[in-house]
Length: 337
Image (cartoon, rainbow, N blue to C red):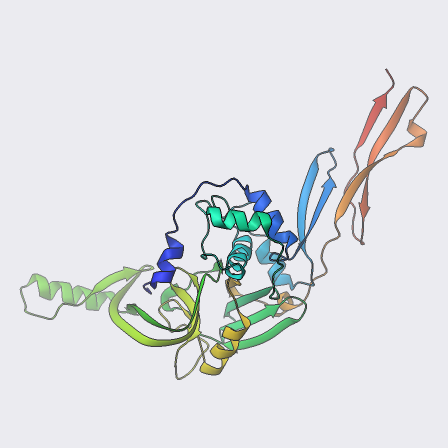
């Protein structure tokens, strides 16, 4: 596992601060300024209750829609919203860090900046998709309004060291040092022989064995002083250049490794807050653009044949801006008293 650099440690262990801004208020500011390019819609539900929904304000591929649906927008640790916050902080020269509870509990300087901000996001919304299957493993870069703009083979971590999920880029460096331990798979038989030799009193060199994801491994220390074009996204894991004989299958200690030319190109496309999604498998149809579902609104309309001079029968009718199957309606009776 990679050891985080000082800037990574500062992000992971940011001090808590009391916040006067709610999560909803922070999210709405990020949407208004374009750091989170969503269309915000309020509509009346079938039972008369008010709902709030978001949809991308650009054509989105099906896989993006699918992944976004896994995290409620109201979750204070929603990675897409956190990414927008990090980008806002970078643009306003603030420390890149979440609050004590995601987008809640923000530092006072960040709160003040959000309350008075009128500077829109200067960068197009960007997203990175890393797929492990089908082989070769691939990195794809999506830019709102432009679509898929770049792709390249990559390497993820051995023994599932690169977990699936979505995290925003929280630190970047053109050049850095990485220190850690690389897990090399070994057989249980080799470990048992070593343990038996130690128990028998043989003088043999110490070997650092351990268990990693239900697999016996031998940890090998590494110290790489010259890692280029680095984008940290999750607990010391990063997208970066690393020289390999080939790319497209698991080889790293947890990072997403790229060829040199590709790493340099992707570094120029990314910025703070870019969400990075790691998925096990992506099907070709999921990379295509899906038609967004129409935003459904409801309004009460009088049902003439069921109304009288003493009472008026109202019915909630769905009003949609697009095509699609409308939900069932609900009726209500209002009597004159």
